[in-house]
Length: 82
Image 1 (tube, rainbow, N blue to C red):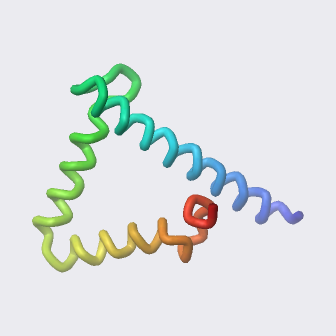
Image 2: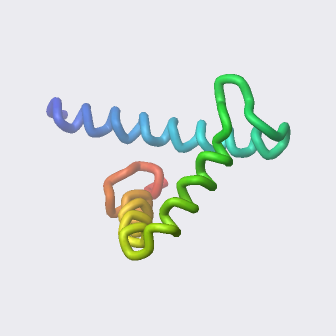
């Protein structure tokens, strides 16, 4: 495999691990409540991001569409292919 393919696979695996850690942080925040050490306020940050996207109208919808596209499998992440 070429060097570019190895880097691409490494980035895909890094994204997979990051998505799992974010999901774990959300579950822990919901179970424990509030801000956790080493995790922070993940749910609050996500709610803030959704609020910001919603208040920006069409630009927010475009950004949301790009984010969904990236995680739907067409963006090349390994998350959607499993």
